Length: 385
Image (cartoon, rainbow, N blue to C red):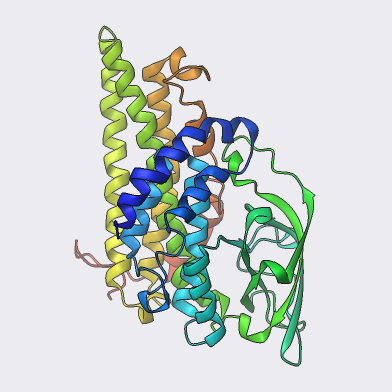
Protein backbone atom coordinates (compact mmCIF):
# COMPACT_ATOMS: atom_id res chain seq x y z
CA UNK A 1 0.00 0.00 0.00
CA UNK A 2 1.19 3.54 -0.78
CA UNK A 3 2.39 5.36 2.37
CA UNK A 4 -0.15 7.65 4.07
CA UNK A 5 1.85 10.80 3.36
CA UNK A 6 2.04 10.00 -0.34
CA UNK A 7 -1.68 9.28 -0.51
CA UNK A 8 -2.36 12.64 1.11
CA UNK A 9 -0.02 14.49 -1.23
CA UNK A 10 -1.08 12.86 -4.47
CA UNK A 11 -4.83 12.68 -3.98
CA UNK A 12 -6.33 14.50 -1.02
CA UNK A 13 -4.37 17.74 -1.17
CA UNK A 14 -5.13 18.17 -4.86
CA UNK A 15 -8.85 17.89 -4.14
CA UNK A 16 -8.70 20.10 -1.05
CA UNK A 17 -6.83 22.87 -2.87
CA UNK A 18 -9.26 22.76 -5.80
CA UNK A 19 -12.25 23.49 -3.54
CA UNK A 20 -10.60 25.62 -0.81
CA UNK A 21 -11.80 29.00 -2.08
CA UNK A 22 -15.38 27.77 -2.55
CA UNK A 23 -15.40 26.20 0.93
CA UNK A 24 -14.29 29.54 2.36
CA UNK A 25 -16.59 31.74 0.29
CA UNK A 26 -19.68 29.63 0.92
CA UNK A 27 -18.83 28.71 4.53
CA UNK A 28 -19.54 25.10 3.71
CA UNK A 29 -18.17 21.76 4.84
CA UNK A 30 -15.29 20.56 2.58
CA UNK A 31 -17.19 17.47 1.55
CA UNK A 32 -14.98 16.72 -1.47
CA UNK A 33 -11.77 16.76 0.56
CA UNK A 34 -13.21 14.68 3.40
CA UNK A 35 -14.52 12.16 0.87
CA UNK A 36 -11.02 12.01 -0.61
CA UNK A 37 -9.57 11.41 2.85
CA UNK A 38 -11.96 8.52 3.35
CA UNK A 39 -11.36 7.10 -0.12
CA UNK A 40 -7.61 7.27 0.54
CA UNK A 41 -8.17 5.46 3.84
CA UNK A 42 -6.53 8.19 5.91
CA UNK A 43 -9.17 8.41 8.66
CA UNK A 44 -7.93 5.31 10.48
CA UNK A 45 -4.17 5.54 9.95
CA UNK A 46 -3.44 6.00 13.69
CA UNK A 47 -5.48 2.92 14.63
CA UNK A 48 -3.10 0.02 15.49
CA UNK A 49 -2.48 -2.52 12.75
CA UNK A 50 -3.99 -5.33 14.81
CA UNK A 51 -7.28 -3.41 14.82
CA UNK A 52 -7.28 -2.74 11.10
CA UNK A 53 -5.40 0.55 10.95
CA UNK A 54 -1.87 1.38 9.87
CA UNK A 55 -0.28 2.27 13.22
CA UNK A 56 1.02 5.58 11.87
CA UNK A 57 3.43 7.61 14.00
CA UNK A 58 2.59 11.02 15.40
CA UNK A 59 5.19 12.51 13.05
CA UNK A 60 3.40 10.98 10.06
CA UNK A 61 0.11 12.45 11.23
CA UNK A 62 1.77 15.84 11.69
CA UNK A 63 3.16 15.74 8.15
CA UNK A 64 -0.29 14.99 6.71
CA UNK A 65 -1.79 17.90 8.67
CA UNK A 66 0.93 20.19 7.29
CA UNK A 67 0.15 19.15 3.71
CA UNK A 68 -3.57 19.65 4.21
CA UNK A 69 -2.99 23.06 5.78
CA UNK A 70 -1.15 24.15 2.64
CA UNK A 71 -4.13 23.08 0.52
CA UNK A 72 -7.12 24.14 2.66
CA UNK A 73 -7.01 25.37 6.24
CA UNK A 74 -10.51 24.15 7.09
CA UNK A 75 -9.82 20.65 5.76
CA UNK A 76 -6.54 20.49 7.65
CA UNK A 77 -8.15 21.57 10.91
CA UNK A 78 -11.03 19.12 10.56
CA UNK A 79 -8.59 16.28 9.97
CA UNK A 80 -6.47 17.38 12.93
CA UNK A 81 -9.51 17.43 15.23
CA UNK A 82 -10.49 13.98 13.99
CA UNK A 83 -7.00 12.68 14.80
CA UNK A 84 -7.14 14.13 18.31
CA UNK A 85 -10.32 12.19 19.07
CA UNK A 86 -8.94 9.01 17.49
CA UNK A 87 -5.83 9.31 19.63
CA UNK A 88 -7.91 9.60 22.81
CA UNK A 89 -9.50 6.21 22.08
CA UNK A 90 -6.27 4.57 20.86
CA UNK A 91 -4.23 5.67 23.87
CA UNK A 92 -6.88 5.49 26.60
CA UNK A 93 -9.54 3.00 25.52
CA UNK A 94 -7.93 -0.23 24.35
CA UNK A 95 -8.44 -1.99 27.67
CA UNK A 96 -12.14 -2.04 26.81
CA UNK A 97 -13.62 -4.42 24.20
CA UNK A 98 -16.25 -1.87 23.11
CA UNK A 99 -13.59 0.77 22.46
CA UNK A 100 -11.44 -1.71 20.51
CA UNK A 101 -14.46 -2.51 18.35
CA UNK A 102 -14.95 1.21 17.75
CA UNK A 103 -11.38 1.51 16.52
CA UNK A 104 -11.93 -1.43 14.17
CA UNK A 105 -15.02 0.36 12.88
CA UNK A 106 -13.15 3.66 12.41
CA UNK A 107 -10.51 1.87 10.34
CA UNK A 108 -12.93 -0.29 8.34
CA UNK A 109 -15.58 2.35 7.63
CA UNK A 110 -13.32 5.44 7.68
CA UNK A 111 -15.51 7.23 10.21
CA UNK A 112 -15.17 10.94 11.04
CA UNK A 113 -14.88 11.73 14.77
CA UNK A 114 -15.77 15.06 16.38
CA UNK A 115 -15.67 16.42 19.92
CA UNK A 116 -18.04 18.17 22.30
CA UNK A 117 -15.74 19.51 25.02
CA UNK A 118 -16.99 23.08 25.39
CA UNK A 119 -20.16 24.20 27.13
CA UNK A 120 -21.95 27.50 27.35
CA UNK A 121 -22.12 27.51 31.15
CA UNK A 122 -18.34 27.09 31.57
CA UNK A 123 -17.27 29.81 29.17
CA UNK A 124 -15.26 27.46 26.97
CA UNK A 125 -13.14 26.05 29.82
CA UNK A 126 -12.32 22.50 28.66
CA UNK A 127 -11.37 21.48 32.19
CA UNK A 128 -14.86 21.99 33.63
CA UNK A 129 -18.32 20.68 32.78
CA UNK A 130 -21.78 21.75 33.86
CA UNK A 131 -23.51 18.70 32.43
CA UNK A 132 -23.18 15.26 34.01
CA UNK A 133 -23.27 11.64 32.93
CA UNK A 134 -26.37 10.04 34.43
CA UNK A 135 -25.84 6.30 34.88
CA UNK A 136 -28.72 3.90 35.40
CA UNK A 137 -27.82 0.24 35.46
CA UNK A 138 -25.47 -0.38 32.56
CA UNK A 139 -26.68 2.61 30.54
CA UNK A 140 -26.14 6.36 30.64
CA UNK A 141 -27.75 9.54 29.35
CA UNK A 142 -26.19 12.93 28.73
CA UNK A 143 -27.47 16.40 27.88
CA UNK A 144 -24.93 19.08 27.00
CA UNK A 145 -26.01 22.63 26.12
CA UNK A 146 -24.15 25.41 24.37
CA UNK A 147 -21.52 23.06 22.93
CA UNK A 148 -19.48 24.26 19.96
CA UNK A 149 -19.11 21.11 17.86
CA UNK A 150 -17.05 21.53 14.72
CA UNK A 151 -18.58 19.71 11.72
CA UNK A 152 -21.13 18.18 14.11
CA UNK A 153 -23.72 17.61 11.37
CA UNK A 154 -21.19 15.53 9.43
CA UNK A 155 -19.64 13.54 12.29
CA UNK A 156 -20.07 9.78 12.56
CA UNK A 157 -19.17 9.82 16.27
CA UNK A 158 -18.81 12.47 18.95
CA UNK A 159 -16.56 12.33 22.02
CA UNK A 160 -18.26 14.36 24.75
CA UNK A 161 -17.04 15.50 28.15
CA UNK A 162 -19.24 15.63 31.24
CA UNK A 163 -19.01 15.44 35.01
CA UNK A 164 -18.58 11.89 36.24
CA UNK A 165 -21.91 12.02 38.07
CA UNK A 166 -24.56 14.50 39.13
CA UNK A 167 -22.79 15.17 42.45
CA UNK A 168 -19.24 15.34 41.00
CA UNK A 169 -17.19 18.52 40.93
CA UNK A 170 -17.06 20.50 37.70
CA UNK A 171 -13.46 19.38 37.14
CA UNK A 172 -14.19 15.68 37.80
CA UNK A 173 -14.86 14.81 34.17
CA UNK A 174 -15.10 11.76 31.94
CA UNK A 175 -15.08 11.36 28.16
CA UNK A 176 -17.79 9.32 26.41
CA UNK A 177 -17.68 7.98 22.83
CA UNK A 178 -21.10 8.24 21.19
CA UNK A 179 -21.94 6.91 17.68
CA UNK A 180 -24.30 8.85 15.43
CA UNK A 181 -27.26 6.55 16.11
CA UNK A 182 -27.06 7.40 19.83
CA UNK A 183 -27.05 11.20 19.76
CA UNK A 184 -29.15 14.06 18.47
CA UNK A 185 -28.12 17.65 17.86
CA UNK A 186 -30.28 20.77 18.08
CA UNK A 187 -28.49 23.75 16.55
CA UNK A 188 -28.70 26.92 18.64
CA UNK A 189 -26.20 29.19 16.85
CA UNK A 190 -24.71 29.32 13.36
CA UNK A 191 -20.99 29.46 12.47
CA UNK A 192 -20.59 32.61 10.38
CA UNK A 193 -16.97 33.38 11.14
CA UNK A 194 -14.10 35.45 9.78
CA UNK A 195 -12.02 32.39 8.89
CA UNK A 196 -11.91 28.60 9.14
CA UNK A 197 -15.39 28.84 7.72
CA UNK A 198 -15.47 25.29 6.42
CA UNK A 199 -15.19 23.77 9.90
CA UNK A 200 -18.90 24.57 10.37
CA UNK A 201 -18.40 24.98 14.12
CA UNK A 202 -22.03 25.55 15.01
CA UNK A 203 -23.34 25.61 18.57
CA UNK A 204 -25.65 22.78 19.63
CA UNK A 205 -27.55 21.14 22.41
CA UNK A 206 -26.40 17.51 22.48
CA UNK A 207 -28.53 14.67 23.78
CA UNK A 208 -26.90 11.26 23.96
CA UNK A 209 -27.29 7.83 25.48
CA UNK A 210 -25.27 4.65 25.53
CA UNK A 211 -23.65 1.85 27.51
CA UNK A 212 -21.21 2.58 30.33
CA UNK A 213 -18.45 0.83 28.35
CA UNK A 214 -18.55 3.81 26.00
CA UNK A 215 -17.08 5.97 28.77
CA UNK A 216 -13.28 5.93 28.64
CA UNK A 217 -11.92 4.53 31.92
CA UNK A 218 -9.28 7.22 32.50
CA UNK A 219 -10.14 10.54 34.11
CA UNK A 220 -10.61 13.23 31.47
CA UNK A 221 -7.99 15.40 33.17
CA UNK A 222 -5.37 12.72 32.45
CA UNK A 223 -6.61 12.26 28.88
CA UNK A 224 -6.45 16.00 28.34
CA UNK A 225 -2.90 16.40 29.67
CA UNK A 226 -1.53 13.17 28.22
CA UNK A 227 -3.10 13.15 24.77
CA UNK A 228 -5.68 15.77 23.89
CA UNK A 229 -3.55 18.85 24.61
CA UNK A 230 -0.28 17.66 23.03
CA UNK A 231 -2.05 16.13 20.01
CA UNK A 232 -4.07 19.30 19.52
CA UNK A 233 -1.11 21.64 19.76
CA UNK A 234 1.05 19.47 17.51
CA UNK A 235 -1.50 18.84 14.77
CA UNK A 236 -2.99 22.34 14.85
CA UNK A 237 0.49 23.87 14.65
CA UNK A 238 1.24 21.77 11.58
CA UNK A 239 -1.96 22.98 9.91
CA UNK A 240 -1.06 26.59 10.72
CA UNK A 241 2.47 26.08 9.42
CA UNK A 242 1.01 24.72 6.19
CA UNK A 243 -1.19 27.80 5.79
CA UNK A 244 1.87 30.04 6.29
CA UNK A 245 3.93 28.00 3.82
CA UNK A 246 1.30 28.41 1.10
CA UNK A 247 1.03 32.16 1.73
CA UNK A 248 4.80 32.55 1.50
CA UNK A 249 4.85 30.45 -1.66
CA UNK A 250 2.44 32.94 -3.22
CA UNK A 251 4.74 35.78 -2.18
CA UNK A 252 7.70 34.06 -3.83
CA UNK A 253 5.74 33.52 -7.03
CA UNK A 254 4.74 37.17 -7.00
CA UNK A 255 8.34 38.36 -6.70
CA UNK A 256 9.46 36.05 -9.49
CA UNK A 257 6.88 37.65 -11.79
CA UNK A 258 7.68 41.17 -10.52
CA UNK A 259 11.50 41.23 -10.38
CA UNK A 260 11.69 45.00 -9.98
CA UNK A 261 10.21 44.84 -6.48
CA UNK A 262 13.58 44.34 -4.87
CA UNK A 263 12.66 46.19 -1.67
CA UNK A 264 10.12 43.46 -0.84
CA UNK A 265 12.79 40.78 -0.82
CA UNK A 266 13.80 41.75 2.71
CA UNK A 267 10.28 40.97 3.91
CA UNK A 268 10.54 37.58 2.23
CA UNK A 269 13.74 36.88 4.16
CA UNK A 270 12.18 37.92 7.47
CA UNK A 271 9.10 35.80 6.85
CA UNK A 272 11.18 32.77 5.90
CA UNK A 273 13.26 33.11 9.08
CA UNK A 274 10.07 33.07 11.16
CA UNK A 275 8.74 30.13 9.17
CA UNK A 276 11.90 28.11 9.79
CA UNK A 277 11.71 28.87 13.52
CA UNK A 278 8.11 27.65 13.60
CA UNK A 279 9.13 24.48 11.78
CA UNK A 280 12.00 23.88 14.23
CA UNK A 281 9.68 24.37 17.21
CA UNK A 282 7.24 21.82 15.83
CA UNK A 283 9.93 19.25 15.04
CA UNK A 284 11.44 19.68 18.51
CA UNK A 285 8.06 19.24 20.20
CA UNK A 286 7.30 16.17 18.07
CA UNK A 287 10.57 14.52 19.02
CA UNK A 288 10.02 15.25 22.70
CA UNK A 289 6.48 13.84 22.65
CA UNK A 290 7.57 10.66 20.90
CA UNK A 291 10.46 9.94 23.28
CA UNK A 292 8.53 10.54 26.52
CA UNK A 293 6.92 7.22 27.53
CA UNK A 294 3.15 7.29 27.57
CA UNK A 295 3.07 6.42 31.26
CA UNK A 296 5.11 9.55 32.09
CA UNK A 297 3.36 12.12 29.90
CA UNK A 298 0.59 13.00 32.31
CA UNK A 299 3.06 13.95 35.03
CA UNK A 300 5.60 15.67 32.78
CA UNK A 301 5.44 19.37 33.51
CA UNK A 302 8.21 20.01 30.99
CA UNK A 303 6.26 18.31 28.20
CA UNK A 304 3.12 20.29 28.97
CA UNK A 305 5.09 23.53 29.01
CA UNK A 306 6.70 22.74 25.66
CA UNK A 307 3.34 21.97 24.08
CA UNK A 308 1.77 25.14 25.44
CA UNK A 309 4.75 27.20 24.31
CA UNK A 310 4.43 25.62 20.87
CA UNK A 311 0.77 26.55 20.56
CA UNK A 312 1.35 30.16 21.60
CA UNK A 313 4.43 30.70 19.44
CA UNK A 314 3.13 29.07 16.25
CA UNK A 315 -0.36 30.57 16.50
CA UNK A 316 1.25 34.02 16.75
CA UNK A 317 3.98 33.36 14.19
CA UNK A 318 1.64 32.19 11.45
CA UNK A 319 -0.07 35.60 11.43
CA UNK A 320 3.30 37.37 11.23
CA UNK A 321 4.42 35.27 8.26
CA UNK A 322 1.18 35.77 6.33
CA UNK A 323 1.20 39.49 7.03
CA UNK A 324 4.69 39.72 5.54
CA UNK A 325 3.51 37.71 2.53
CA UNK A 326 0.64 40.17 2.10
CA UNK A 327 3.03 43.12 2.20
CA UNK A 328 5.23 41.46 -0.42
CA UNK A 329 2.29 40.92 -2.76
CA UNK A 330 0.72 44.29 -2.03
CA UNK A 331 -2.68 44.90 -3.59
CA UNK A 332 -2.38 41.60 -5.45
CA UNK A 333 -2.28 39.84 -2.08
CA UNK A 334 -5.18 41.93 -0.78
CA UNK A 335 -7.51 41.16 -3.67
CA UNK A 336 -9.67 38.05 -3.41
CA UNK A 337 -9.64 37.53 -7.18
CA UNK A 338 -5.85 37.39 -7.46
CA UNK A 339 -3.70 34.25 -7.77
CA UNK A 340 -1.51 35.83 -5.09
CA UNK A 341 -4.37 36.43 -2.66
CA UNK A 342 -3.54 35.83 1.01
CA UNK A 343 -6.94 36.88 2.36
CA UNK A 344 -8.20 33.38 3.14
CA UNK A 345 -4.86 32.48 4.69
CA UNK A 346 -4.82 35.50 6.99
CA UNK A 347 -8.43 35.08 8.08
CA UNK A 348 -7.89 31.37 8.80
CA UNK A 349 -4.69 32.12 10.70
CA UNK A 350 -6.34 34.67 12.98
CA UNK A 351 -8.36 31.86 14.53
CA UNK A 352 -5.19 30.18 15.82
CA UNK A 353 -4.69 32.47 18.82
CA UNK A 354 -8.36 32.07 19.79
CA UNK A 355 -8.67 28.27 19.63
CA UNK A 356 -8.15 27.52 23.32
CA UNK A 357 -7.27 31.16 23.90
CA UNK A 358 -3.59 32.01 24.20
CA UNK A 359 -4.50 34.21 27.17
CA UNK A 360 -6.07 31.23 28.95
CA UNK A 361 -3.04 29.04 28.20
CA UNK A 362 -0.62 31.74 29.36
CA UNK A 363 -2.51 32.20 32.63
CA UNK A 364 -2.27 28.46 33.31
CA UNK A 365 1.42 28.41 32.42
CA UNK A 366 2.05 31.24 34.86
CA UNK A 367 0.79 29.02 37.67
CA UNK A 368 2.99 26.15 36.43
CA UNK A 369 6.09 28.36 36.44
CA UNK A 370 5.57 29.12 40.10
CA UNK A 371 6.15 25.46 40.97
CA UNK A 372 8.61 24.51 38.23
CA UNK A 373 12.22 23.94 39.26
CA UNK A 374 14.69 25.96 37.23
CA UNK A 375 17.88 24.31 35.94
CA UNK A 376 20.91 26.18 34.64
CA UNK A 377 21.98 23.36 32.31
CA UNK A 378 21.44 24.33 28.67
CA UNK A 379 20.14 20.89 27.71
CA UNK A 380 18.06 20.15 30.80
CA UNK A 381 14.30 19.73 30.45
CA UNK A 382 13.46 22.24 33.18
CA UNK A 383 12.29 19.76 35.82
CA UNK A 384 15.64 19.02 37.49
CA UNK A 385 16.45 20.44 40.93
